[in-house]
Image 1: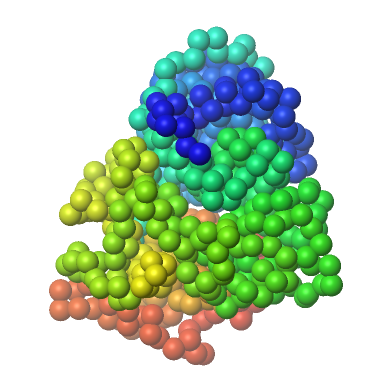
Image 2: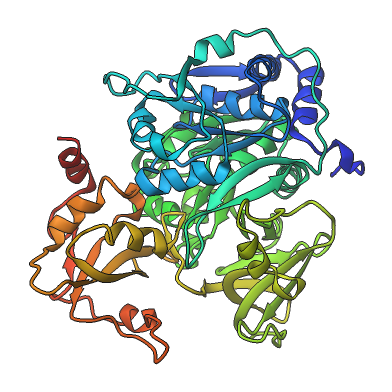
Amino acid sequence: MLTADRTQWTLPNALRRQAEIAPDSLFLQVIGEGTATRGEAYTAALRIAGALAELGVTPGQTVAVMAPTSMPAVMAWLGINMAGAVEVNINGAYKGQTLEHALRTAETATIFIEHRHLADLAAVEAALPDLKRAIVFRLADAPDTPAPIFKRIDIIDYRDVAAHAPLEALPPVAYTDIASMIYTSGTSGPAKAVRMPHAQIYFLAMRTVANLRARPSDVFYCFHPLFHMAGKFMGIFAMLLAGGSIVLDRSFRPETWVSRIREFGATVGLAHGPMLEMIHAQPPQPDDAEHNLKRMIMVPFPRGIAAAFEQRFGLRGIEVWGMTEINAVTWCALDEPLRPGSCGRVESEWYDFRVVDPDTDEELPTGLVGEFVVRPKLPWIIMQGYHGMPEKTVQAWRNLWFHTGDSGYVDEDGYVYFVDRLGDRIRRRAENISSYDIETAAMTHAGIAECAAIGVPSEFDADDDIMLCVVRKPGVSLEAPDLMAHLMPRLPHYMMPRYVALLDALPRTPTNKVQKAKLRGLPRDASIWDRKAAGLSLRDLAQQATR
């Protein structure tokens, strides 16, 4: 149950309370690194908070974290919040323009960063005048490469920060204060930093505990990165509040998923749709259901495999729908029969929800497909805008409803069904991608006159592959493999196109807007280059880029 006193809905308060109640209770295990009890996590966070205060970080300031899932990254997040600062987790795949944009938008002077990301940071140092210091640590599997030389940014050893004297007097942190900023991609511009107050992340964790029926005996297996809300707040924070423990895995491998949950005694978990399909595609084994994992959050639960997945692995899938800006708004009930394709009912005690005409914002009748719009019934349980982008905040909040950009319908029994995305947003392997970022990187190539990036259906349900449609400048003989080599050092790996269509012109409306719907209708035949069919892997491209 949610505590009625919302003033207590902060991460520092939750961590302190848990450390007092059960200091020796196992809280966190990072595979390959070790474990931490609630008391140990609290002490580590206090030490980091003390170091940040000595460095001049004050409540309300932003502090970035750019690192693989690891014990130092988790403790940095907790310590930043204990200091009253705002934690900004940066996707480790960001580089070049995307990294520069994220750090400039965050307006941060301090970053916790793992050794493998230093070269990418050094490459954009000149464009980041606000960034003053980098707190650096090296994980065991980091490449054995020398650290780059920074011209202006001071380098601080994480070990010195972790050994600092604990912060004695915690600054006051209100439930209305911003706790974290998470970057989420839009449709027509660069990634937006979602301002999430403490009440929002606390509320999300508590609703996860309630709907998952999490208990102190539960072990949550999680392979989602810390720059997503799912693993961070629905996993780590939820298990902190539930009194249980969480096992963090740095990567997802479908062929070892069953053995992992057995090895660590997992009882609950979470996965996105394409990951579930990859697990289900593994050859069935007679002992697939011989494990302790019985409840699993599905985002979404692909309808084509849902019933078979539950039966094969002996668990209950709990499908939800939501997004970083508004948390999880719909949940399937644990004790109701599976409804393939439905993401459950709206949590109407906490949210107003409508399906509207995306052009007029008028509410549509039951059963008709339209855009999902949401607003909260409690203050501070959804985002407080996009940092540094007031125009995007206003656009999303038109007519006093948050416009999600997702479409679907509600049936006569009140069950919600997600159908598709609106606009140009691309969804790939649980990452929301803006076509703008891909197009911006591609236009740095001297041979491209214009281009458009689109999402096209992949082999997984509700998942996209990326197609880049390119018009070459006259007389240029640019080929797709050369374009891939150009993009690799400029884009995160998950933004790299699979398909390239070389066109004479892009279809446009009378007002000169690119008609991406027509591009999505292009037949994927021999005229369209396919990176996979050509045998060109992202790993090969990455190796070429570092030579």
